[in-house]
Length: 331
Image 1 (tube, rainbow, N blue to C red):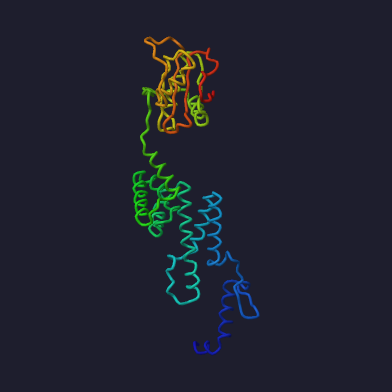
Image 2: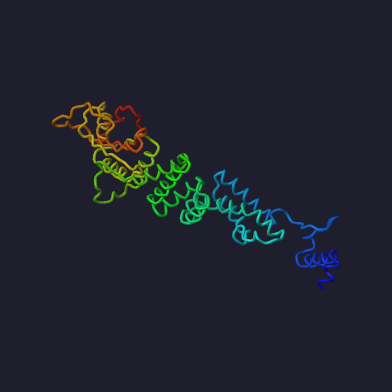
């Protein structure tokens, strides 16, 4: 049989084509003037489909659609039956074609790891990102996401230690520093390890009941305003509300400044600046403070001095407008 097939190669090919059509469909293999060809589209051939998946994943990642980028990367990786380059030693056309696509599969593995990290799936992303960094230690885009994933899963100290090791190796080998994106992540991690500080915020012996909507409203205003005023009659709970908001504020440093001894509106900003360390108060403190309306303020001067966030409370409805200040006031 082998001898007859070798003596009649065209006949042997026709037999193979006939059997393939019988099993896979008559339209799968098309006849041409010079022989036969597979009548398949690009997405039906794994060697071509993987290129389409890689291009789609890259395009969606650039557009910020990381979920779609992940789906495209995983679709491309599903076409690979083994590790990239695993059959490169085989001497046949299929093995050669698969070997040509090995770099594409590696790019898909990279795209998948980056997409996982950017979707916040840090536990899944950490190990493949670490593998990629070992393979290409100067890939700073991957290293950025690895630092974020390690900070989220192991802790900021581990991520900072990795950054420092990279910084040292870069300085020793190339005489340069990490790129801006890596340095920005390092600063974020350093800020994340700073302790939460609450100056002047009283301990809460019991929960503030029935004020959840008020707390949420003031906290929401503080995210978009430099100053928020809480105005109402005495005994309404304005100071307690400001204390609760100050305690829960997302700012890492909060100052709660009591202004009971301030007798003039013009002295408010000076008093606050003195207490939070933004300047020295020029107003002498009276021996016995007068009895103005009770006021208090919470601020975040040190974590972002250009955008202080203050909460203001008054104990009298006579304060129809906030006192004067060099910064805008918002109700």
